[in-house]
Image (cartoon, rainbow, N blue to C red):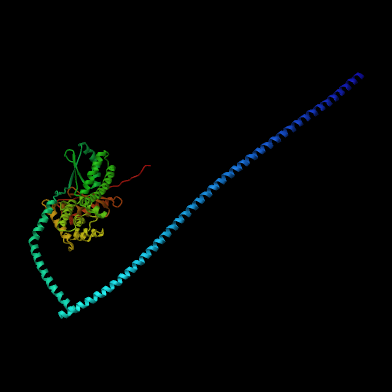
Length: 523
């Protein structure tokens, strides 16, 4: 029992000693950690102080650099301002110098002018004195003459004038008599000479207006493509152009028949484009015909420009240039109107030059003398072509002499200029050549135009074409305005009006065409 107690006490004592020893060891260890932490803190503070000083130094250095930069920019700005101010001051000084020099020169000029004025005043005084002296001398001479002649100055002047009048009348009568006798002897001969020389210098080709054109083909295979399935293509071409197309046994050729040269040319060019392209169908035909009609309109303008350039005519109004170009496709009594007008213009120019008149003005009048035969609109005006041409010339500010020559070349109005009889004579010369004119062709064309005008006078009619030498009239009506029953009625009424108002050989077939189209676009 005591032994156990001793063991327990020894164990407790051991524990107490061990605890004490542990406490002492841990206290020593803690003191070491605290000392090390204090050292680290001191090191951190020192490094932070060093970094702060370095940052401070950097910021101060940056601030100094920025200050120096701003200072240099400010100095540059001040220098530029000073430079500009110096330039302005220099310009101001230059201006002041110029003004001072001008003032000096003005003072010198003023002084010179004053001197000249004084000299002129002195001269004027001398002239006045001289004139007074001359007047006194003249009066004394007149008085002496009056005393010597026994007449006053007015009476002497009247006697002298009467004697001069009588002498002048006698001289003038003798001169007029001799001039008239000489003119009678030479005028007719000189006139014939001028006309013959003019005709010889202007030898133009005869112009014969035909009503058919021949379109040549590379092969007969193209004929079938032009005709199309069941004749659709050829009917479309005839409807679009108003030209009758004759396809017969003639090898490698088809015939285009129409009294209108413009229509024939449109049809010929359209066929050429279609055959060259190879695509021949109704839609393509209509597209090509529209493009060709536009091309013909442009060509008309170019023909007019070339004509006035060839003749040396300038300053012509654009509308009159168009009218000159349209002359190419017009005829007068079977004579091409453009060739006739060119011929008349050249004749007028030569005759005017021979007679000492203005040849350019005469050419202008000769070219425009038949301008009234070219319609400016679709509706024909019932006015003589000479008066109509004169009105158009006046509208477009042509010369008065030119307007009078146009209006008077068929004696519609009185001639007021020397150019007017020249134009009349040259027009007669151009038309009097053998074979130049054919009355039959002109009357035939006029009859076909009247036939088309009758059809166009009905409401709802869009187009009218006289074909087959006037034996058939094809009328195209608007499907929106005209019904099928109305189309039959229009056909009957047109035939009755042609029968009652016109004179024609044989029979006239009136065909009214009404077509409905529905067009949509796929997008």
